Image (cartoon, rainbow, N blue to C red; front, side, top):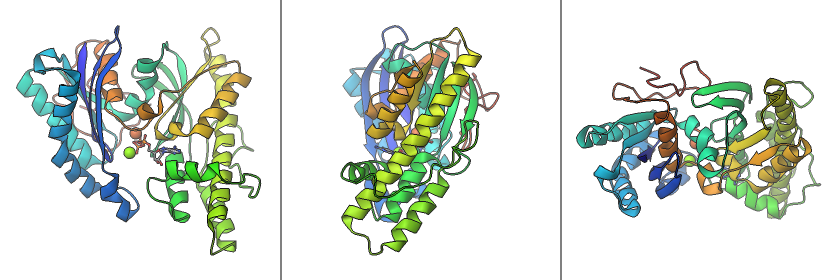
Length: 351
Ligand code: ATP
Ligand code: MG
Ligand code: FE
């Protein structure tokens, strides 16, 4: 199959053409970030995002089709994010996909954006179900048991901020630009990780839930004491923050892998990381160590496929089409759509 994917749920306008499931190839993966339009506001402004998607999406799709060397005859289906996300942007992308599907007479697949993140590793690696997924992005931080396409069980989640959100808020607090993740990571590289000790929230409790809001508060308290803070202090605080997050994730990952093996004693233990925060090198390394300590395989897609992109949406479309014919013309875009809700990722969900 050759599928056109469209992604517009946040501040990335993206289109891609992907083939599969046998011969898995990314023929094109076009992306335009709107960061410049949002930086001045220190975060994504939904109304600006929606308008920016409208202005550029046609061109991005053209580019993706051209780079792939495809015309509409070569495309078997159109897959687009139908939620969750900023609803204005989701509407732009999904309605554009509907128009294309109708005009070109192709099946339409409405994709759960989180399912896109969740299945990316099956595009880039040889990975069978079931596997354990750690989804860490701007809006989510959760452990999911992935038994199949559309078959997810949430094992644990953040009880407050998502990790990406915590990175972004920490960056803002320290005067670093949006989005914070990459900037915190860069500063942390030249920080002294021993200077500050931040808490490891919730680790004294069993289970797989996590908490990151307190971390940010602790960091603010430390920073306040030293105002005005110099560059080295910012770097040291970034290093402490990143280490604390990495420790929490590594500890929880070991417990999650133990639970996975209890539930699926015959399956190879695998931990897959996905979502924008998975681009972080220190987090990747500590997850790798946690996996090795548990005799488990660690799978992380390349960084460019961890942050939002349309190749993951096209791929999720291919995966969904394997379950049978799909026609999501009647599907409505949804701002909220938990991956583990009973019908998440199931054909025709949300109708
Ligand atoms: P969701 O997928 O939950 O709907 P989203 O699509 O906004 O949210 P992603 O695009 O997957 O999230 O990830 C963006 C987040 O990842 C941002 O919060 C950003 O700060 C964070 N991030 C990106 N790169 C890094 C990095 N190198 N280190 C830490 N965090 C990072
Ligand atoms: Mg983004
Ligand atoms: Fe995302």
